[in-house]
Image (cartoon, rainbow, N blue to C red):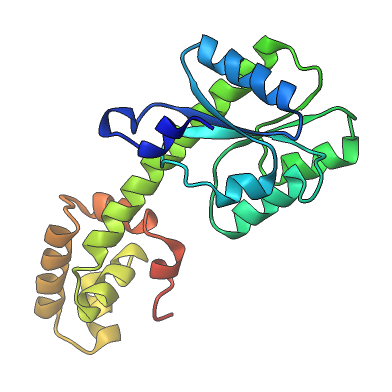
Length: 220
């Protein structure tokens, strides 16, 4: 692997990085050279263990994994990453055309399942799709974190009011449910909108919908 990739220089943080895991050194080199030929950084590993032990920079991109390898397979790695909450897009390569295996991989969210020898353009198309998906996921994650951080500034009572507003409850209904006055509800609601940076109830509900699921179910 190119040691320079581990430095994660600020100027490089947004550059896509394609990670190849294949026990065939010739295949790894070929794919790395293909990626570099179109201006995409690439890093190759001979096994899933090598990848998991590496300190990769946090950059957009995707994984190109050989399905069948000594030790942990590409599918094993897919399951491991999913369990760890890593949603990095995956493209699988196989020399066997195993249909049940491809179905399993695609159901688990793989971008594509390509048979070796793979056409350069087919792989480039799949990689482009993988990078685009990862970029979209990263933007979504940033938006979710922003709203979660804002939610973290709310008091317990404000969170109760927000939850009820998101459920479409009227101020008087919220006041009755929480045992407080309608004026107090209005004050809490105004504070919630300010802290969540929402100008309308519609924006507030959208912010609620973008919160992580565990926060939306907090206290229920």
